[in-house]
Length: 213
Ligand code: PRP
Ligand code: URA
Image 1 (spheres, rainbow, N blue to C red):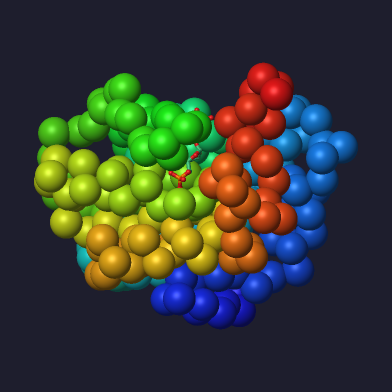
Image 2: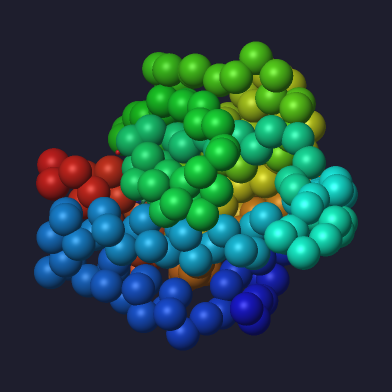
């Protein structure tokens, strides 16, 4: 898959992702198709964001002989930010069913744009392998920055974030607060509006996923 790296973010450049991103952005897309397409895009992103995962070798017997096999090293943990991050989890688990799932509940106060954490349910040994923070929207970057701090305090050492749509403002915030974090996005958009929504964006991801607009 091709990629570009605006602001250090790894942005996928693939016809299927462009095609599906347009379905997601279309205001005429209802919550059922929105959810299904969100999961499919997340599944397509798995091949790339796992590229940095380490593997280890072990002996395996084929029906013919013995050979050297490979398996992912450590325990993979994916952590969706509720609500909208949940929509990407099924697509990821289809490809990596062995991954553990932690949950972070965060809601952005729509007047201050500050995130509030209302739930944190994580494995106790986050340092046991790669951790993937999952949230479709990187807008001001407040939620993502707080989530990364929380995961690091909770023990995550090998951490990356995947999102669907990134705004330059959110990317800059993450670069400032967490310069070493690897960030993957399906699209890099133009800017935020005065209410902190991404343009052209896709609207409120949680509302569109669950039909609560
Ligand atoms: C959305 C989104 C991110 C956050 C991004 O969640 O899923 O978590 O906003 O905005 P930021 O980069 O400016 O922090 P929201 O707070 O709307 O909650 P919801 O998913 O429950 O609707
Ligand atoms: N959260 C969303 O769901 N959409 C945006 O455009 C910004 C934050």
